[in-house]
Image 1 (tube, one colour):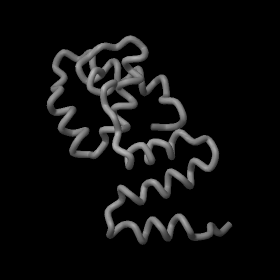
Image 2 (cartoon, helix red, strand yellow):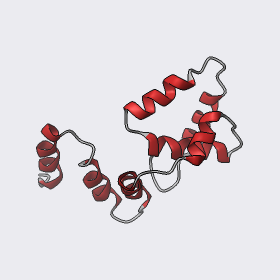
Image 3 (cartoon, rainbow, N blue to C red):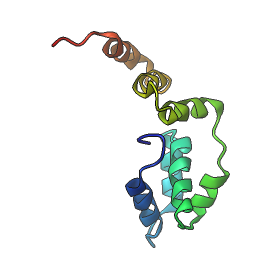
Length: 113
């Protein structure tokens, strides 16, 4: 996720990844789930499908329906106005509790210089 539309180079890389004959699909899917990255992975792999790539992971991505929490997180990347602040605030939902104070301090401190 880099902005409103997935970057074409990233989409190409995902499509090329899926062409690998030794790709361990189960491992890829386990990693996506373990990282809690189902929603952004689905966006990326569905975009790879939109440029003609075909693979069972793309079928999964096109059928994937993100949870409401994931839709909010994705929306922070899709909004052109005020995107940086929304992305930072959205990240609070995925940052571990012990790291939240440091993140909040960094978001609210004034930069000198």
